[in-house]
Length: 291
Image (cartoon, rainbow, N blue to C red; front, side, top):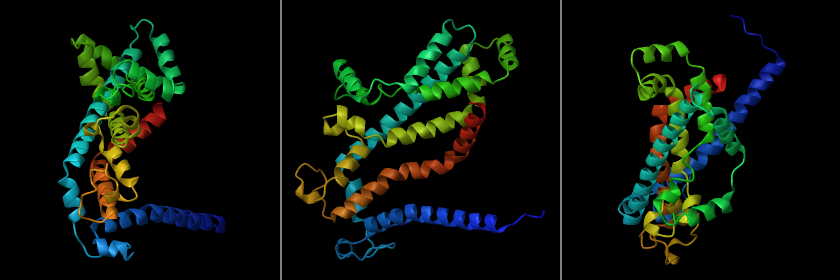
């Protein structure tokens, strides 16, 4: 195949490659530097010798963070809340979309319009805060689960793709005696699996990175999440000087602790993402075409 080449096309390709190279380096260089700082000795960090490679390699920061009960507690809180929020959010969205796509559901147009409105207009932070406090959910795990449990965006995308499924497939399964739960979990769910996996990774990353809800609703430090704990570490300029910081007694450089905590925080997402990437890309493609 003969490719058409011109000066403008060549210039565009040079600009394109240069832009994405600079963009990639702007992400990779700080990331690699953070890894190097977390693995370097306190003396090398203080003298500013650490660049893209660890100087005075050591794992003291990781050992002391992993052995810290406060950090372990916040890590378990984050894993638990991420798993619960993701499963409930995606599951409820799928069930709601299946009901809205069902022709026999009386009032489904009114319900769909109501859900559509909530996607564009929310109550805002202060009314939501007052509602959560008024319901007595303050300083409980429910305050980190219930307010963001239902996603109108996921419901609408699920409904659109369920509407596109062949009706004959559903009718055939019903004639074979399949009930609503069998139709949903044995017929519909396998067909929308790529989109479901995309929603799972979206929801998991979103809930994993959440820290603002903890700031608003949680006072008990034993209920803090990993991201909020990390925020406390990163916002503390002099780690050992802050008496409220649970990491002030660690016998390592403060930058060691900050960068090691940062790496541990993002490690689970970095490990999981390659395994669900194919579903993530395919799910976005399906949603874009049929949505």
